Image (cartoon, rainbow, N blue to C red):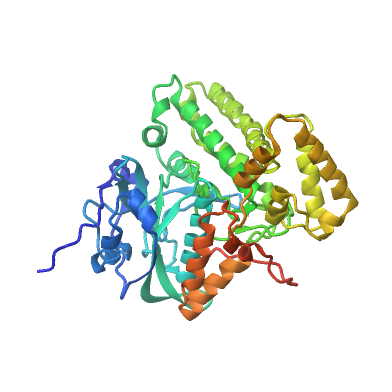
Length: 488
């Protein structure tokens, strides 16, 4: 008899202990012939999992949803959300939470299968996912992690041996995703709309215990929680802006309470700088454009604050005032994070009142001359100007002199500024044409080497290694704008 391999699962099911309103218990739908496509060894180690065991036949069966790991109570979470401003009942329509993995460091991570089949929240969908979008989430989420941006992470992708029908017939796949939790603004919206005040209090207390244990004893712990979520989102969205990341679908169900980036459907990174950049094929009005992301973040947080009104104070008028005061802090918190990050990108350690105009003038020049966002800061890091329209312009010469004068007015040596810039300006990002090339090779030709090499160079974005030079190059000019799709 073959000895069963210990895969290292150490699952808790704290979410399953919440009121039944919050979720539906069910098992994944088995698939025909699962095959492991890519596996994240380093994440497995972090989670306390046996990487070798999970790549065995039994391990792959769990990653495919054909086998339930010991200790798991699978469930689909219910939530709601404002999608492009319109409120809808939603939920995990193609995902299941296996449980919360307790790591050797006693940390807790949700383990979720994405593409695991129909749930009560599928709204007519098949609950499945195609290979391309699952590989895309793997690539981008791991790139975000390497960039130092809070994010859900990808443990594995398996193909199912079955097809999914979208516009064409595509290979089916399941992504295993790890997250600090999948609690969303939309989770609170759902409970506030369809539950009782006591249900809302249970959810809030669970969230406090899970993510904010240090403030559980605060006099008004729910207000403190709101303030902490605002701080985390202000920091997160500033980090997006600083690397030119466009999420693409900032619905309230895609904003996590823990402050991690979640759901990598129509996301992409800017090449040339333009605050109006939109990649998503369905964002016709530009609601979620790059330059709008901070405003949408504030709008989403206001929707979160509304759900907490019954908990903030017994007097509703006072509760509204507390919520409004907390939300009013978001813009300043975001601005502080963004400007601090921009100073670092320019090698500036101290603060002067004209720093913001220095930054905004550079961005204006980048937009005017269609300069690449990442590579402009890459060039400035080494101050070796290239023969581009931006760097040849008299306007840039004037800006460059101002910048040099600014650096001279701080105590830190030139080398310290250079190191600060190296640590703040990635040498590479997941360029859209590189991601598409990797996905095309994998999905159309079964060649995963292109993706593996891309993941390798993206794993150390601040290394400035020679092998990254090729990946910093821009795509060939095109008459068609780059477009992304939700991948559902």
